[in-house]
Length: 548
Ligand code: MSP
Image (cartoon, rainbow, N blue to C red; front, side, top):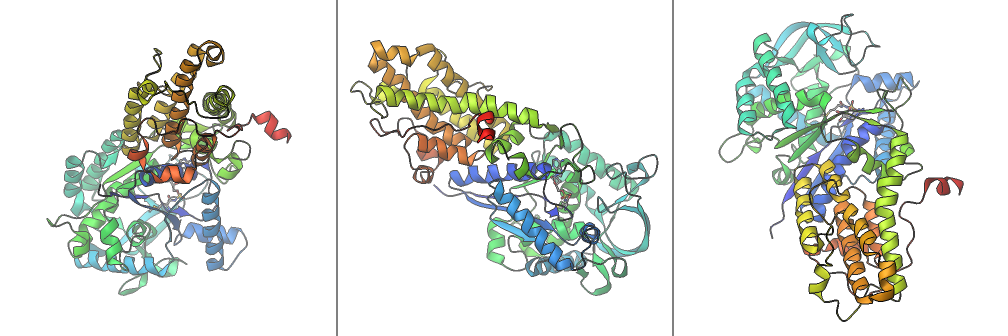
């Protein structure tokens, strides 16, 4: 089977602070989708990184009483990387916009846009929000003239001569691309926001200032051929998605991974990603053949998905409120898998949600401990007890009889095959919330975790074992084999847990995952008669854990 490639990105983060659970949300979604595609055998490129040419970072450094910007940026980029590893983020590349490889690509791109005639120097006056790194029109301000997202800071008046990018030249092509590619802007509910913005761009002639006077900034990539100007941080930052896969430095790599399959962003930065960014590419593609398809059309991102925002215990997450806690702290008692699960389970992708510690603990006890952990513990323990420490081996337990244990609410192997394809479809549609729903049993298919627990109640193997060992063996085998499948289903979201589930079945997790999704998910691969190690709880009860 030919391998597909999957290139997914997160926004690159400002390093004016350490990551908090809101940042973790975007990154965990990207990680789960990357892990899923790796399990399928696809060639995956997952890129995250840091947005370093921003005045925000300089302000934060000064506030911290430091003067060496490079040292500050290095330290903060390191802090982001290590936070990501603490919650199991498996990025393939981490791009920093101060790296030489990035500068090379930005320069090439700027020149292409300039050659297309889409850059023009104009004198300009507007209000600027350093918090957003963006200009604000009067309709985008609060009544008191401040930015609604950063009401603590006054807007700065900017009056200078800048390079402008003629976004207005691309309104019609953008509309056409959005019309022809219904799944470019996701969720669908966000498409109108972009179309509305394009109407405003057209009506109000909203071209975008893409440079600033050098003397007014202490950071920023120089504008090629104009010593007095630096490139606007957003123009530079968006290009990370290309420079990380070799634009300007490694043509073969770029050809392989561009266009990007999926760009995950928060709803706050959708406009930059679905209007400015594709317009920039349309413009550069007129000059740069690397950016064109064979039919001459520009190579644009395939999907941009905007997720909602998390609050923390009902409050906006912000540095100034002091609640921008790192994800590792949220994981202190419950572990990283529970935090990853929680972030993806609590809200449908696209909606806003609240990260509440009480709710996290509730889900840990109920969904993880009681529903998943107990299932594994009980099934393994019973099988060990009635089948001599092993996966049941009874002569009568043939592959056929294993497929259907004949209990109403349990769909058996047919249903679990169906469930597996529903789960794959949900992952393919970036619907990690849907994956969790289906595994835990709020979806339509049978043979999910709820049904598995019900099967134990209905068949009562602990009683059945006294009268009919063969029937007991069939039930327990079906459950053990299902646990193997559940490990695959949840592995992208809860990688440590999935490994533990396989170990509980006496399997080598690395070997099992090397099989690949399709090869592994056929019924009956767990070997009857193989040894089951003594189980230990997957999700220890919190009281016990904190006492230790
Ligand atoms: N540097 C720009 C992005 C440039 S991409 C070319 C930026 N950085 S940021 O650090 O301020 O935020 C980046 C992203 O973090 C947001 O778009 C969003 O994806 C995520 N989140 C930040 N706070 C969040 C929440 N409270 N909840 C969910 N996501 C949040 O913007």
